[in-house]
Amino acid sequence: MNQIDVVLGLQWGDEGKGKVVDCLTPGYKVVARFQGGPNAGHSISIEGKSHVLHTVPSGIFRDGVLNIIGNGVVVDPVILYDEISKIEALGGPITDRLIISKRAHLILPTHRALDAASEAAKGKAKIGSTLKGIGPAYMDKTGRNGLRFGDLLLPEFEQKYLALKNKHQQLLSHYKDFSMFNTDEYEQKWFEAVNKLRRFQFVDTEFLVNRKLDEGTPMLAEGAQGSLLDVEFGSYPFVTSSNTLAAGVCSGLGVAPSKIGKVYGIFKAYCTRVGSGPFPTELFDETGETLRQIGKEFGATTGRPRRCGWLDMVALKYAVMMNGVTDLIMMKSDVMDGFDTIKVATSYKMGGQTTTEYPYDGGTSVEPVYTEFKGWKKDISGVRKYEDLPAEMKDYVAFIEKETGCPIRIVSVGPDRDAIIFKD
Image 1: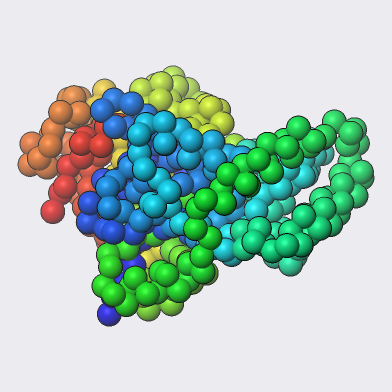
Image 2 (image 1 turned 180 degrees about the horizontal axis):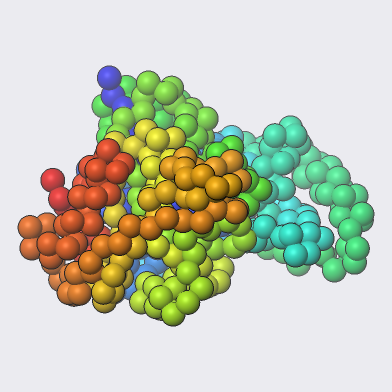
């Protein structure tokens, strides 16, 4: 049976999915995004220059690879077209490389206003939204009010747009100082972007994807955000608005569960998180700041400094289980080069008891229990063969494999696309 492989993040996002997809795509002919919106920031470093993708799949820089924005994605036309323009400025032909699902939902200017108004109203309880309008767009999708790319082809599209806009404005009127959320200027850019996007193909991608699978075309599904931000099983309510787990591929692209092949789970050698929410191993000391500075841990989409901490094995094992991960990929290993001691949380103390199960509240009131490892204290950024890595580094890898029951296939030792070690 021909199957679609999956790449997704196992932490709170920002694991380095863009680089991994770019690295794996020589073995695939199709790369498809299956969920999320422009809150994603997939960074790809090519010849020392970083390219950040928000909506376009990360196979876009590879010749001969078709890129699909699936039905599970919500799209802001302004952000998408700006992204396309930057790719085209590099000289890359994109029109024939990118296809958009008719069923992908549109983020309206008023969705952004609702996002900002809702977050402001939460005060200290805010969840750390990127304010891109993603949550409200998904709310309209599940509330059966949303607009989709296929609607752009209808003669009554403008009437449908105005009806939803008016509904949003009524909702905005209930917020304090709602007049500050004026969308007129952005709306003009929005319609300009919509018209420019009409040169791309809007198709029933569920048929395209399944037809490609039937033909034996190698396909890779690309996730956004991370497993611990899944709306069902993440650290709710501090989550994103979509299904970030491997199960989201089925609904986000229109493929049957039996057609899921390999599941590549990506994680950093440590942990980071952007925005609010529980983070059991977060470090508030000099070590945390060192991880942030060496790892350049600042949001690709927002620029916000990321919260940093030690690797959380409880959370990682949970994500491996929930996704059915077949192959692990460890990112940013080189960031750990200078530490004398490296710690890993292997259990939590909670309510006077010790547990290795990820809790319902995401670890709001747990105390991590650490296992310590000797650091390798060596620059590994130039290493390209696994056998050439320091023994301490290989001990760290072996421990993670034993705990998760899953092999680590790839180790990243630097930001550039060639800073990769294939372990097996």
